[in-house]
Length: 349
Image 1 (cartoon, one colour):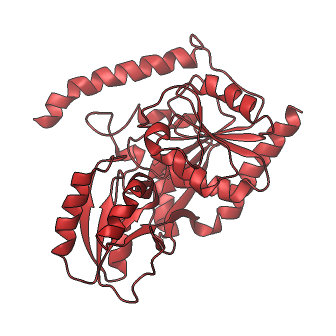
Image 2 (tube, helix red, strand yellow; image 1 turned 90 degrees about the horizontal axis):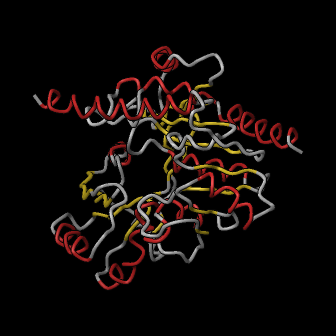
């Protein structure tokens, strides 16, 4: 019954997105290109598919080799228009992900603009030395045409198995994956077999011009919000998150025999004093050897309550995460990115 009720709005949504794509494909609506190397990152599914860690992976591996910059719309921010993100910015004005990029890569310009066509020249006006720009969450922003488009899709929710919103979580028809140059299947099991990877490859059926990679999440060492040490022993973890999917993080701790309790909120949730009261109530009723863990993205939205954690003698541990390329493919992926930047730069120099 639910599917029947959702079928009509899903069909209407599909018609709107397909008509829009048709106008772009037929050049009724023109797309803008730039001579500068532009690397687009996006997805077909709504929700977390690992786009932000991919931006960080690119910055980590290339920001010392090229003068990189990031342009994002700043999802969830209360401000409008073009903006340069500073390390002292507030996430409510910049969005949590752009501010996280700036915190982790302070030397990299991070800018915001809903309209990327307007944002690119404004970014270059502020930072004329820029050699390449990463366009975050831009797969559906078709007014601009990146020279290289990266499409992320989650192992547990491949776009091939999803349906158009609101029947499923697809932002547009799954057939539009053809616009990607590189497809990354993210959040895979670390022990993904070559046989299963081949099955997924056959299911996605990449075009001859597309490359397909598989990545797993690699979790780093826990850091405490107030630089407190990690207890030598702990058996329980309370996850405090406001992200699209906390399941991979839960699985990670359970793999090490930890009992996981969860306090989950919607993606980009703005934490409140009431939420902290809920946290306090939950924490004091859990075993004493329970630590509170959050993500780096959530920490951006929780840092304003830093003193609250001190006053209540609660430690908040932050879990870093990064992409790990399976089947020893990191070097090949890096070479493709490097070749694109160098070739585009040489072509337009």
